[in-house]
Length: 306
Length: 254
Image (cartoon, rainbow over all chains, first blue to last red; front, side, top):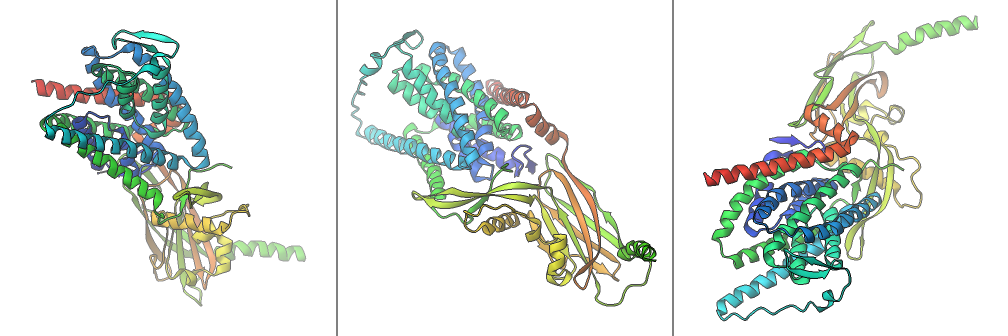
């Protein structure tokens, strides 16, 4: 069943979109990741213009994170104060990201920017995850486990503007969380991702937050930042395709339910290796597109004014 | 006396020019882009009306062209920089139709001479215009050729020779396929009757291509009320996501 997307102005098979949403949903359920960093490149591959893919994916992330954050609120695992500080940075970052995005769009380089960001981040995250989970598998085979090393956080405590975060049990400067938020906001606007895959490690290792509040707090920040990004894209680029978002979402929500069940039954380490391999495959495909000579050197841009 | 001759000529001229006229029929004079729009086929048929018997000489040939709205497009060329392929040069092609299909009753070069093509801008190469191309970009011509090549691959531009059926030099019919990735606007269907490569009569009519229903509402809203559209997209997406996951939780708990 072909469906004509009103904003993307392309006709795509609705079942393909359901399928993509479902597949990424299963993965996000299995691995507990948002899935934006997989969905956006997949949308490029099926021919959705990158600008539309990024903006629409931001819209979809708001929705898929919403039910997640409600669950965390019920369990009281959201650090609202930390979330707000991260959010302030995030909103500024998203605004900055959209400005950069629109500037490069006018230069005709936005596709390159988005794809380069993906290659770099998917490459880094994928290899780190791959190495880490291989090590974990090796360790679990050795049986004898070494106690994890404590991180040194001296330099963060030396910064000014300290604030008490009761839920996280922290008394640290607001500068690092604002910078983390800012960085994630920029990525959200440029790449159409929630940024959880950057923010969660940063919160644990850099800010030293307890693991149980990390996911809820990052979801809280992600919802508002991606909502803001969606609004910015919708008002400046007109690239949010609500039909596309809803189709992906329905597939995604259904897939996530199955993914959670599958994920609970599979060994965690092997699962991580799989995810890492998948991330590297997507990264490799995008990198090849940039490295190999394209069959068509010319491309037609938007109806450009003079 | 001179005035009389001029007057006579004026009276005779239109009569001569419209010696053979097109009476046209279309299977549909508008294309509606709905949510499940999957391309469209337009049947174009007609007859040649004439007061005099069929003229001697080369047979009547028919060219049917359907042209989408023209707009300037930016064409970019990739080059290898720092090991990766990036867009470097760009050129604005001033007028490029979003859709262009030409159907002819015989090979194109037989039905229309080069000069007539220049005059009536029938072939795709003539329909695209890139005046004021910047001279510092090498191969400005390559850019407009690239537009034609890319859009031919997408099925937006096509020349279909020998696809117009002509009966008894009077009745003609053809069908034009329109792909699913159409842009909106007023398309025009142009009919040229030619003899020996020279145009003897032309006819033009409009085909409106419009998004309708939900597609129309969403598109208009996204352009005219982007803030409300954005808020609505968020609300719909949140409602759909929350609704679906709540439904699933209830299903599992029951």
